[in-house]
Image (cartoon, rainbow, N blue to C red; front, side, top):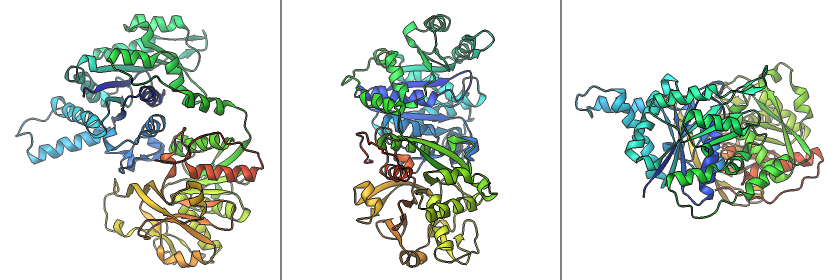
Length: 548
């Protein structure tokens, strides 16, 4: 099978939607019956983002195989609806670590190790692993950062070399750029795009398509000017104004003819005509007038919403399914400890506490869980959110005032949350947690089982600490239901309160498996309880709620 490669680079500035554009193009190709996979090349020297602060990198998106990856892989999976693997995220750190390890073993027979060919060969080898492991016939490869960044140069050079190795007829280069608006003259300017393309061409790559981003409509004459000065076909300049609904991007690209142009240029043979009706329905529903519900998202990285990207999107997905508009109040748990932000929590129809690490802001999260339990407010805890739910219950319902997690208080007299046994002797922090997909056995008749409509599910994990089994008996005798456990009954996966409208926590991260076309069942159940609390009449739209 001949593999086709589509390489996506960015210019002018970062954060212009290159990852969403890449994901949307993948959707267009999948709609044509093609087997697609997407890979992200990240220039940073960290081996993966697992040890990076969310303020530095946004959320860490975990895959089925346990790979801790860039948040763009979340976009890829949500748009293309394919579960990716660790070969789909490559960092400079991974590349150099492998090359240095080979040099230490003597694999290069005493040769001088250089960026070209050794580093670029390793990058190309990792690109080639994607079709081998996924069976994809079209591989989209996004390069992080912008053209001209010194750390991106080995990746750009590798993509240039791919043209001759894979064949010109099998490679297609897309450059995503930004058109700044000058308010004094009310103009969009193309000169930064021209300079960006010139820089890319100086590195040996001439783009086949340019996706021009802007915060306003892009006139046809401007697109023609870009085509003329950047030496691409006029129909290969794709204007992409900012949209208020991210999931409209595939529709905008299809409307501009991007899918057909790429298919024709690469000589691909579609197996069916694209059907984007479900995506049109999503956009229509997103813009429709709906009852508003408020969810207080209580975290400690709330200043950067990207730190909770998958949680936010999962709430929006479920909101579409339930028929409500979800307004998120971003509440800083550190501020709650100081007495600030409680107006938002008390006014919310539901409380969600997402994952996290470290003791900063923990008491604020515990207080939010206490408020939800005592006031009958729907509560959804994800990973750490389940743990603080357990700590709060132990303190205020069971009377163990000093109850805590050994992560935050190693000497606590009542360690309701404790380090997993197989984590005790680990020294390294990177990629050593319980990571990836694991099965969960559901208790019949429980809230979780009713939401999933299943007996066993598989969910993605990222944690070191677990509910302490020694405390199970105390909790179960006071109305707590451990409705999800590992098949061997060793690990608590889901905890819920029987006498509460909705108070449920998961040790796993359900947000990683939610899709716009298949919202996660637990998020749907949570928002249904939130809508009931708000007293709004919510009409569900037809969507599949099951997960893979």
